[in-house]
Image (cartoon, rainbow, N blue to C red; front, side):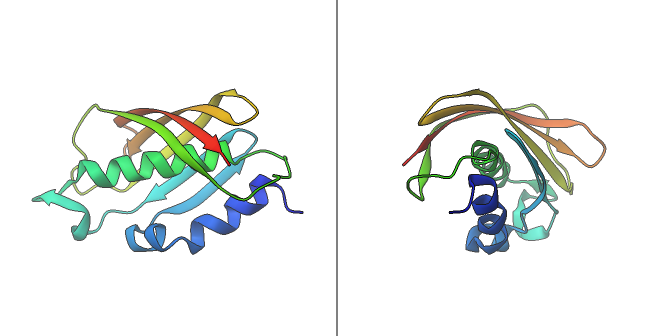
Length: 135
């Protein structure tokens, strides 16, 4: 049976939503995942500003990937975000974004994850806290 890391490494590039938004998994390690989302005009809310929903989706996906970043062979395939809080720090104007998800507490079924979303200049765009629930 594959590990959670092996599963999520295959899941992200094959996810229709990730493909649609251009989200890629660029790095994965124990309890940590880094994802990227390049700017495209379809992600803008007005002018060149990236829509908050696109930023939240990137943060949510980074949290999920970090939750799956371990060597456990799951009993079941599945899970879901139980909660997600996003605080927007600054606007992302025509910016490629990177999200770093880091598990801060891992339980048997629930994991708590912090996510930082930055633009290509390293400026923080958003901070998120998520709880992920494994099936």
